[in-house]
Length: 280
Image (cartoon, rainbow, N blue to C red; front, side):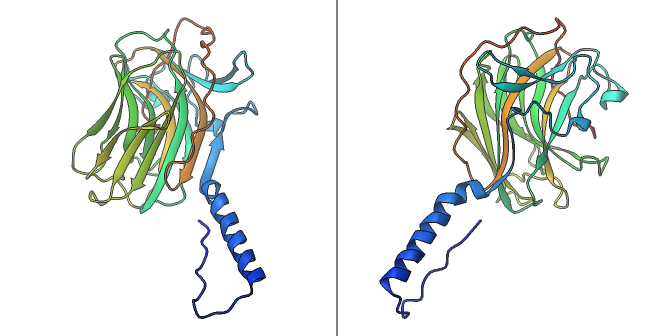
């Protein structure tokens, strides 16, 4: 983050120079909001980032186009998507895409933002994970997830299982099927329970917070962001994603909302479901 230094009170500066300093300071402040963006994907280039991290799903993860020209990512996990090739034990299914991480491991505030839409074609009674932070990916077999967004019986929640405090949750209410919803999780990454914090926003509104709990399992590993469809009971499932962003610092302005359009018809009657990251 760029900083400006105060001018010593005993220093005489011409009005012209003073005006220049003020203008430059305002310029830095106006541009500081975008300085913290680490990565951003909106799929308008038709490319899937980190495609080598995808699972060999029966229905491949793909980019689709809405009638207004908007491109988005669709992930599907079928009941067959389980076993050693998916780093699960059947019947737990998995579809997964690694997105990336913020530059530091701890003592940093990071905002993870994404738009998600869940088609109403999903079956009832799912128990799945749709998004998560994971430490030790491709490094430590003992790594694990810290914070995740999931659904149970038609309702969404965000949970944190870092540290020794058990699992804390923020309930997000019933799934708004066939509607794009913008999510932002503002996380202070810390192994200190007194400092760890998770603020959960939906469409720019604060829904709830998790406090007094660590937000990392390991201080030496980055917290990687994943998109997932992992169903713990093997139910089929699908989800759409767009406007992915990781930024350092607090909440940044939410991207322009995506027009509320019905999702495209599934390419197959067999839909997938959330799953945990590859190391588990």
